[in-house]
Image 1: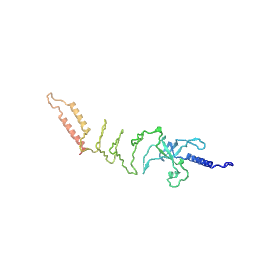
Image 2: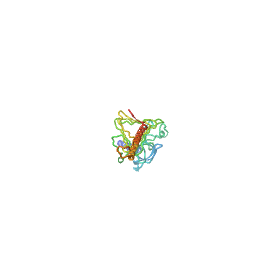
Image 3: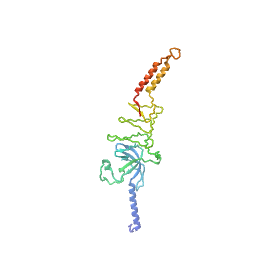
Image 4: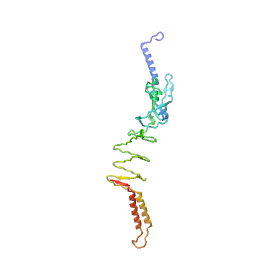
Length: 287
């Protein structure tokens, strides 16, 4: 009824619909689901971050454009399971998803208490979380979409398989494919166990640099043991001795075939080769 007049049924219906629409709009204006955000700072010890929401909103009723406040101590998502996890560096300026839980999670998050939420708040900024990995159109990453790749962007890559004092195995299995390592320097270090490298064919090419093999025993072999060992302990001293022999030998007479005094030197060369062959006896061919 308005004044002395009664509303028609259609007018009453319209008023109710408008009222419901207004309430609905107000609810949706306060409902937070997923919003883009930017990382302001990171607390790696507690695995939280401070963020700035990258979208503004219109205040209900006043139509004023408002910025979201900076949100602090927001837990960020880490891909994990069974105590294993994948760590990625999270830096200031990274874009991310900010989402909210439908209930108050404060008791669970702080104290791991499994009980009814302490408040009735819903989709509140205080109950948010962050998922790193959102990019703008202009900030798209250089993906090829035809590979599985880990691109570290200059950060160190570590694979740690230890847990509670136990060592886990690390396996690279490319099937019939090729496993390639391209690096400035490469070190394989096994303090207590042997290192085995096997395959249909193994090529080691050091280019113009020396290739050094050292150990108490070096075994080289195969079904057909065709190989060449260049041992400086034998050939370099031998070459030096021959050069000295050529540069210092003299003829005692002018007669053809006269003794040049090299017999003793040649004998010493043979002795040296024999001695070095013994000293390198740890280099074996396994048939």
